[in-house]
Image (cartoon, rainbow, N blue to C red):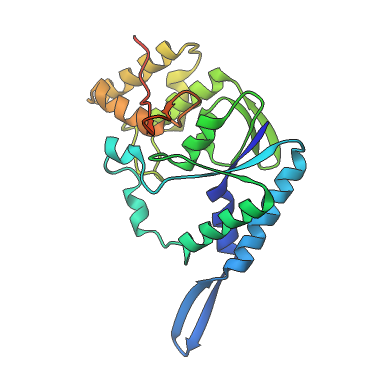
Length: 246
């Protein structure tokens, strides 16, 4: 049994808690991150989670520097380029890897996919995904979120996925279907049982907005967190989601 941990979801808050503003001279300020503190906060958070799941092997999921989604939709996460990065982030990640090595924790990273995908690809029936990212609820299975267990059924995971394909994601910079928000997506998908019905509703919404089924497919592939069986380990490439036949 594996405890699949969203490493960045733990490490970014730990790093932010370890940031300090220093005034080197009057009016000359700089923000620094004390990596030793960040690493300690990260380790404490992970150990707390491990204590709630005895008998599970911790696996720290990490993303690759490149993502296949940018090849599908070039604007994907383009907004992140303007974000202020944690000072010395690559070195901090390297420190986490050393911590994992010394602690007997596994590191999981797959070429051309993000950490969320690694979590979804590796998740088996008895494993637990640890993340507060709502996107992970598009993956069926056991989730540990904010101190509580959530058993996400296949139906609910599919519903969350198709909803995300309609809504889009501002933080990841893909727009979804124009004019469709959370309530609209909920209304469009209400009562639908099969993936065929859900996808038909998604395509219908895009066509009503003047867009093609191909446009809907691009957004769905941005929204899709890869699941078990959706990665070609030999070619080291994701297996792109294919819509059900309507």
